[in-house]
Length: 92
Image (tube, one colour):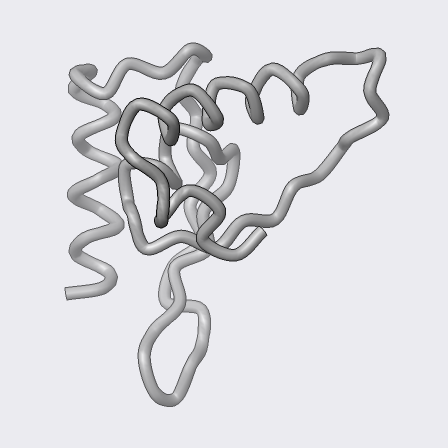
């Protein structure tokens, strides 16, 4: 999925992210992997178990982070903020 929530209003985006997590975690639906591109760091941490950070030209993997936070993820959690800071440092 390439920027699937970027053109949506905030409330719709939140609801669809929750829906995506529900679908992905439903064991009756055979979805093992979802690949998503986003420029929103918080969205990546909220949804992903693994975040690949790409550099600008020339494009290469600048970071590969395993997101080890329980679901549902709390954006106010200190560990969540630490992941945000780590990813931001990789792209800054």
